[in-house]
Length: 423
Image 1 (cartoon, rainbow, N blue to C red):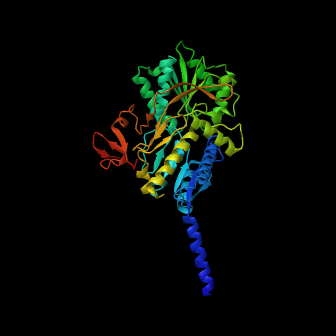
Image 2: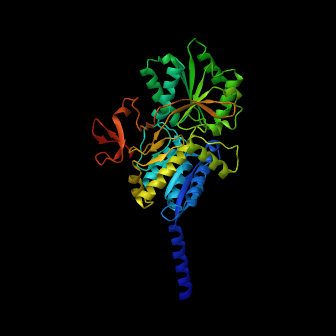
Image 3: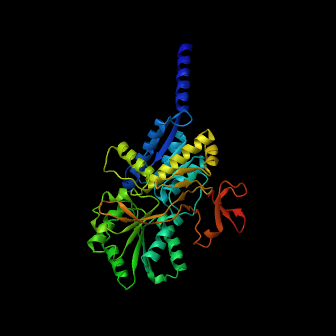
């Protein structure tokens, strides 16, 4: 009996030791449902990064192990799966979420359990959580520069703000509406429209856009339409003969991955604003593309902006782990501030104390092969702003998790106090 107990004890110790020798990386991306068209690729990107890091010897002498779950484009399920990753699987870090509603679902769980998540998609800002690093674009790194480009370079006078009906498009369009009005655009020259996830009947909406753009002023669509609703939207633009010369569309959620499922002929000349395009000319990008195609075993697969955001987030986290000598969240977080990693456009991404990164802003024009020709870019990287300057209340707020006098994500510069939630 004693020998049996000893054997069980040794087995338990061995399993605990084995677990301790593995750094667990949680992957929280939809592999089914309306967002799978975009998120599955990010799951594969994390798996590639884990494999690549393990080939280099892992981190702190330990191998990395990816733990993949499927929240299935179900926003409450994101919270459940995040809890599963942190409590049951005991992951050291999570890479995940796409939509802001999924991130908002995860946020209270990850703060409660003091987890660490890297969020790799452009979003509406107005947030800075102690437990999340935002590796995608804030509005001042995508939406505002895109509007400036349309206004200054294409001389657009009328604006259609079209989005999927959830927090990211609504908040982004609230910011853009305020920004446009500050630039002298009249309310009658701004049309705002929202549709549900997976919306497929675009005939009436596109007809309204066409009519709105036929009143003698140059018109553009600023699109925050997300997920697979983009396929019938662009198809209907083509059906109604709306070309980029007539009414250009600049999209914030359509990249190379989404275009790979389109007939791109009706889309030629339409635009997207991102911080990375596969067509970016840089040696580091060529290496990344080659590595991706080899990993995925498909020469036709493309790269895109959220993949690059995942890449810089993973690289920064790995660097912070080495710097901290630990995967403990409370040690990794302060080690993140000021870290610099190469981005895939030939520049540098720097981690800021508001949990955002510096990023270049690029405007790309859709080509027949589903790639983007870069037609405009910022001269240097732009620092991500957690709180917009274009909404009165938000303009007073700053985020700084490094300054001990502030140490919060929503410091009011007038009252000199942090307010509201933990972000």
